[in-house]
Amino acid sequence: MLCKILKSFPGSQDGRFCEQFHAGTEADLSEYLIAAADPSWFERITTDPVIENKAFSTDGQQTGKIPLRNKSKLNNPENGNA
Image (cartoon, rainbow, N blue to C red; front, side):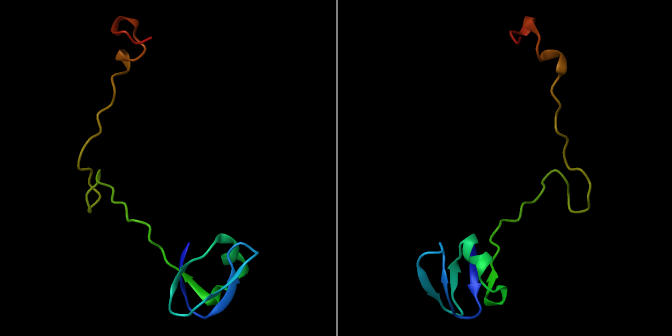
């Protein structure tokens, strides 16, 4: 997970090899290291995209209707669907 390093510290990404993380930089920290390190040493950077729901406008009104399938056409042998 991408994190901003707030305080320099040595740490291990996998529990085997140690590396130095420097304050003021960004680093991709493993979940293993995040669980073991002091939370005051780093800050998680969220890069998740914001997903906008296009079905509703900003005032909460529905902008479009989603067409429903005609259930009578499903599983109908006459239409080639069995």
